[in-house]
Amino acid sequence: HFQALENVSFELEDGETLGIIGQNGSGKSTILKILTGITIPDAGGIQVDGRITGLLELGTGFNSELSGLQNIYLNGSLLGMKKEEIDSILETIVGFAELGHFIDRSLKLYSSGMVMRLAFAIAIHADPNCFVVDEALSVGDAYFQQKCVKKIKEFKEDGGSIVFVSHDMNAIKILCDKAILLEKGQVIEQGDPDSVINLYNYYLAKR
Image (tube, rainbow, N blue to C red; front, top):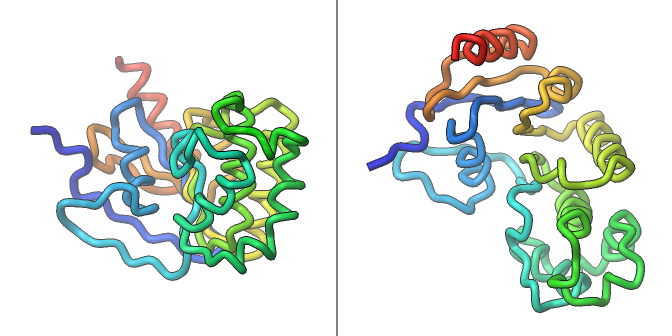
């Protein structure tokens, strides 16, 4: 028996960014999977106002046999979008991803960075109220990473909420308003990013 999360509780307001940090296996990705509906919790509940999209493990919600274009419609439908809604933002998604002629090629021919480009472009343009980001962002090249960070900041300025999971403490400090430190599925510290990161570094030094 393994309990991934225990008594985890937090609130996130419009325009706020929450950073979640902790060592591998602490439960960070499980929280994101529950928030996005990929994993169903055994107990407890979540109250969500609006649509949640995000960038989780690469390949989630994609079919490698289909083209990039076909996967936009597949992934969009899994996010709860109607075909007409996807039609209206298709050009924007394709333009943001910058995949060129590969947009018409099978996803199995894509590199991990290309899959990340497509996944991010779909998720951020699906009109979410909350956007969740896992370490998948790190597989992109420096240019596209900066493009994503700029887009995330614009999303936040427009009142969007963000849940950000990362091992990059500088990114947590720059992007987040508050942070949570997880250890073995439990919240051991919650507050401003600097104090939470300092405690995390203390635990790492003890180890």
